[in-house]
Amino acid sequence: MCVTPTAHWLEYADWWNPVIREPLQIAGGMAVVGEVSGSGVDWNEEAVERLSV
Image (cartoon, rainbow, N blue to C red; front, side, top):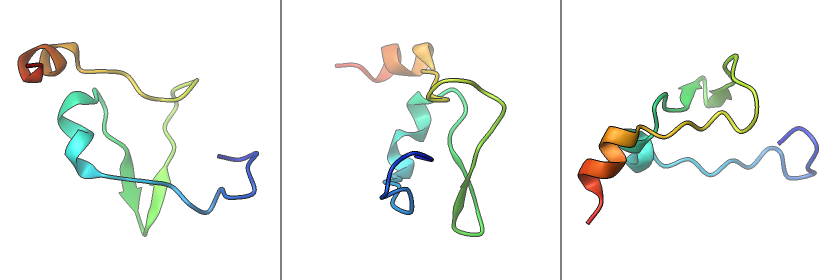
């Protein structure tokens, strides 16, 4: 997000939280970046397996 001219736009939907190991934290209308490298998205494999059809 830091290198794009549209960095002020971030699509967020809480419906994906069950399949993300550590859901994105929102504080004061802004995404809080953690200490993870890369995209910061790590799947909750058990939830993905359970919710897959």
